Image 1 (spheres, rainbow, N blue to C red):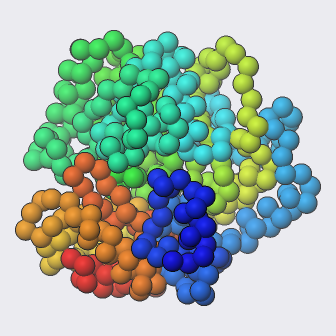
Image 2: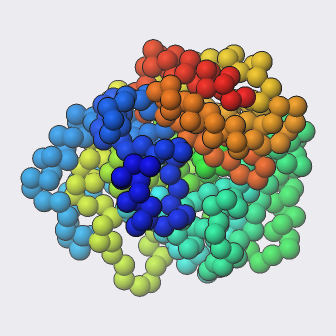
Image 3: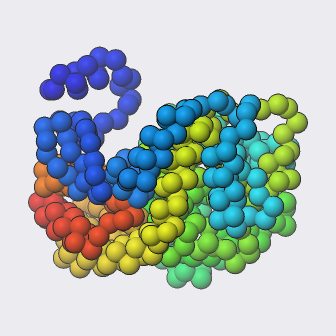
Length: 427
């Protein structure tokens, strides 16, 4: 056990998870690579849990942070803040939401917490619809709408949460149906559920479930849900903490795969926007955002330094079409991994879109999750010089692959080769 690991265990909570049997300290990074304290270099296919969106040590972000730090770091929302306003203007325009207002937070958890506050206050209801296998953060209210037992340490909640089918396409009672029938069955389930309860405030949903193992419904499910929700005045919150900013390749926001009936009422974001700086936020129609009838501020949401970094990062992403790169390189990587694992009985499915890819593992000859294999692949990939993540929910075990969106074809091929060797050694 390293000295730092021993010190960590002495002061950190037991439930604060660390990867690897011998945890590593990352000391610096550049591009799509990071180095540990022993000087070993890794190709980073997880990006600090989808947070290093463009690249490690991106010069534009480094310059923006340095220059802003030399002026002023922070003043709170009690004072006008030029970088915050400029970033809010850019995000409002990109959101697709009509007459939008933007509020910045420090994290995705806090963004979802704020969205739940807005929805329940606007609708005067504490009932919320959420998806099975979902994850929305670690605050008290966010845990209350998280449909993933592994990340839900308490059943206590300020909300009455009702869980809906549809977030997982290839498991559950509707898995045998084709896409059209799957959507129709989920819609009927939603209608039936609403017949047994008072009208909820909102449906909160990840277009692609992150912690749940990068699962997703067929395109159009949430558009079909929206027709039912609108009949009851129920709001739609799209949790874009992991799917936003072009990661899925085909779309800038995950909700756009379900946009037939328009944008969500509320959109939450975080992670990749700051490229490592702590920033999240909420976009909502003005009538919803302005519904609160008590004072509110944010001490650390949208500080000068975080918004300056985020603005530089977002500008780089847009100017270099990293969404298009995610679509091209991600599509190639998915096909490469599918071909490499086609003969492995322990690989149930390679799924995803863009640079958001999941590999679901099972015990060979069964449909049962194999968390042991997932941990073994994680370790073997690390030994080979590749960092990946893992996740999954009810009876599932998945590897999570989400590199910076600037990933090159050569790096994708290198990572796929390392991952193939790791899978063959463990599956």
